[in-house]
Length: 108
Length: 501
Image 1 (cartoon, chains in turn green, brown):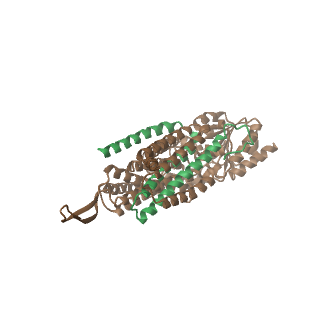
Image 2: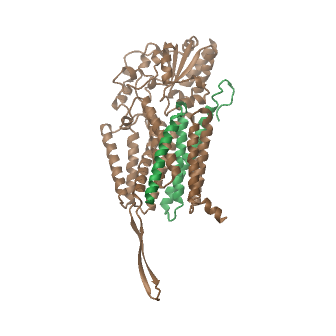
């Protein structure tokens, strides 16, 4: 029973998140699709959490530890790199609405 | 103090932090609906991520702090300089690479999870012990006790296997996409020809068979590794035959894959933040994949099934010299005169412009033309770059005003009243063969109808075909004149000539 409810709750979250994702992402204009993609990229770096959780388990052998350190490093590259690069791109777009000022300092 | 610690470490508190985290992700992505709110949106999502990480570290029993610090330090040391230094032109590769490592992390996590269960999802005896106890009456009682590791719930096994397969496909597929975009691997389709689909199909069947065996409780680490390897081969086999022009679809699709595999990991680990984040990315990737496929008038299955236009594309590439008709070449001076006396000029930027880093020179040229009262706009094909929206980023970097950026649907009707279309490094997206030649591999793809304008100037390095390996009929049109040379220096030369008129 308890297992079933955990599963069904998680499936409910899964389905709802899918719908919310579709609604929210549909509103992003074509112009911002590259930052959108690198931003969502950063968000799926959240698998980092999986690595962190497993590193908390006891009784991991050497290979498991090595694999997890790689996983955490991968996830961190994904998160940190993704958010930074998105920020860089979006800063360029932000300076756009005032195109008249030609000498304005560009981007980041 | 103890009370405070136990509260912070309670499942409910951690769960609440996760809810806050994914709310921030959604709120952050809502910000991406407009350029003015986008920066804050991205930072909001980053704060959400920081909260999710902290929440995870609060779990009671969390340990191996040194290893956690090591992993995060390596990741930061690699990720930060990469993100800081990457050129905007190389953004598709960067995104492919970031996407790949995400998928790799998912696959590795599933693997360790499997190992931790004792290399099986089924129940199994971990150890047998015999204890000798002293009974109530002082007598010795031997108690035999087998420690049985209970079976993992079937759904956890299913989601873990799914995450492992899709994560591995995504990791290798993204790396191949990176290699192609970085031109380490040739952009043209590399395939086994007609056997390709059979090979792909076989790899899918074998990987699934291994996965089902594991879900059924097989106890073998090698089987799991074999499954990862099969998925890795599949990732290679699927992306290698896909031509460069289809890369925006591939990147979007792999992005969706990694998202879905993260969501599956979330279900397996019972972690709501992972589920929500993964599904949002899955949705985003799916929407973009579909948009890109529509822009190319190609179905997603057809793209994945292999090869851009099969052999036709390669033949087209080799037939470059055999085309009937002549190419008219022009000089920077003539081009400058043509532009100076135009009343309306449309710039058609393509990937070639980006490669030559010519966008700033183009911006200078258009400023000069604007001073002379020429009306300027930029016509941007949805797949002009190597990923969705790529060209807009490059032009934004060069400070091109928004209102000059026109999407394909808005730009096409305007070409008929355009005096000069200046095509800079764009190739396939201007090819009239997509409309006129049913035998062309790109037939049916929506294009920028540049050949409707009064005259066309094409700046191009040489007559070599584009990334998709297809010849462009536009270059043989009598209205078209070619200005051969590097995009950046050609544009600068035109600008220099212009200032003397």
